[in-house]
Length: 301
Image 1 (tube, one colour):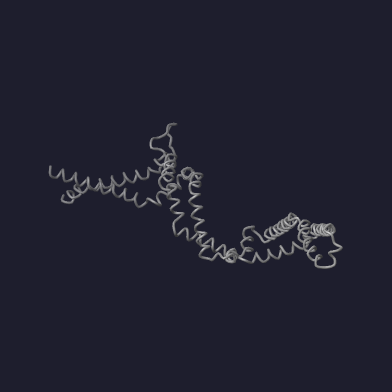
Image 2 (cartoon, one colour):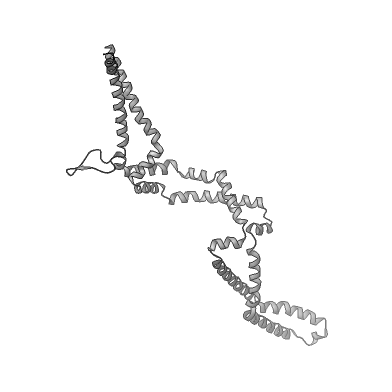
């Protein structure tokens, strides 16, 4: 009889704890289960699918808007990109790249040594052609007529030849010389200029951008600060444009909508399992407390 009395008193709190536990456990499970709508006699059963599968579209849209409007704002992105740690990391990486010789960098950029050699040949051809065009545009005939003609006149005046060389004859000689030089450049200029261009390119490809800038009296600390400053200015100028063109809310919404309900459940439980277990256990505790309260009320009344 005594054991029966103890069991009678304990039954209420224990049953309350069990009911509270399984009620919350069922509520948590119903967040995701059933994963799809269930039908009976052609009619959809209530509470199917679960709360999250049923509201997946609204959840995706709300999550995207919250992240875009509150979590990843233009100011947040700018602050992160301009943080000293990231600025130093970007600057270090650029400096590391600039310490690599041009040939290595260009081979990596063009994807293969063969592509690099083709690019080098094209550059040599282009530079040679530009030099020849620049020389032609200088007006070699006019330069020879003016400069060489003046030199001949000065020399002739100090010698007996001045009596035989008139200005007209000197102009004729220099004009003919100019024409010959121009013809030589047109016919053979590439033969002489191309090897010089190739030699210069060979010298440049084994140099590093840092070394070339140091030759221009730009020291390493100054170069580093220039790169860091350029990075800051690019970020400040580009963040607004980037955030305006990247639909963060749309990306997140599409990601969530594209996920299977099973994957969404795994993701949520991975993050919230401890909290959801706490809710389930809290249900048992509340049920136990209510059972004890009810037991005390019955005892004193």
